[in-house]
Length: 121
Image (cartoon, rainbow, N blue to C red; front, side, top):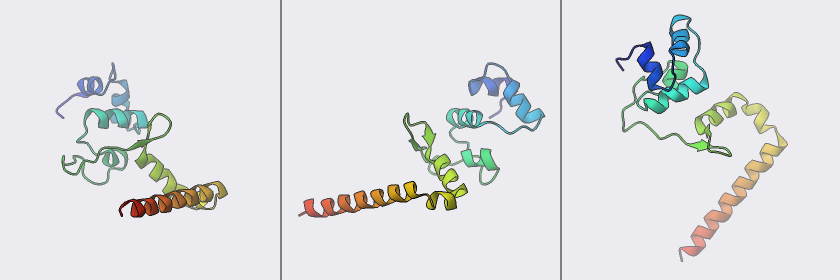
């Protein structure tokens, strides 16, 4: 982006370069908040690349998907929920409450599908 620590920090919403300086100089891992600030300001930077170092740093505009958020205030990125699900998949799948929730989603989907079929006539 051709920015130094100071200008990069300001671009993503930090008044000082302390956070970015620590990430660069002390090789600290950036927080979720910092990663979000970077991707929000520079949407061509791939979030997964920032988080893991895998894949391409710069995403083509055609490849870039808009993030999907869920939660009370639409504040949780769906990618985060998916990561958590895969991390705790066995525990989640063996949870009775989760099983009931999935069954209710399936039933709702079947009802919606049947309704769609009936209204097409």
